[in-house]
Length: 221
Image (cartoon, rainbow, N blue to C red; front, side, top):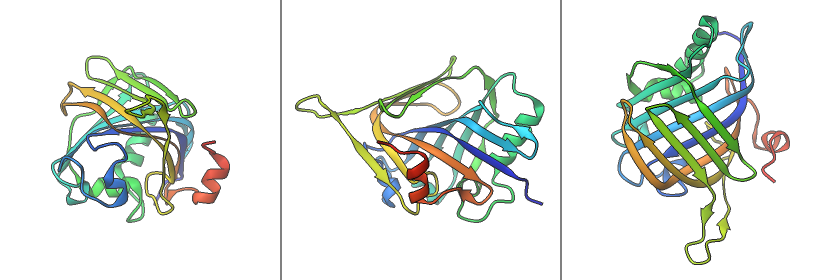
């Protein structure tokens, strides 16, 4: 029987695509492959009776082709010191178990074929969607940051919003410039590549809110 769970929080992603990631518009990845990291901090969440409030979750990934071709690699990174119950709860959610076809974690369960051992360590997570900045650091493994896209002529900050009415990860996100380096199992070094920042709300049936409700709850302006 499916468990009752809910996650609402702050989300960031970094990948090897050019600014404005073509994959989010159903195009092939810019470099032919896709690698990078995702991270989210749970502001409010639970799984059955287990509180997930305040948990930080990071994962590095690599796909040799467009992600829908599968054969992906992923390594989860969780904070040390979380309880066994919290660990089991978050792994249940991430597994996609009991979740409908086409929802985010169910999709990842199909396209990720190589699961690297999880890392338990400290995670520094800073995120400010109004300033369009983010930073995640994992000691001796991962350092990623985001900043506003800059006009190459004037150096003025440029705003780019991605709107996905039928999105599966988020409905609306701030597009920013990403800088990311991983020296862990899945290595990459990205400079001024794609990054997105978004408020997220997920449950057993995927995104909890439609675009209109998401905008009402998590306005970008």
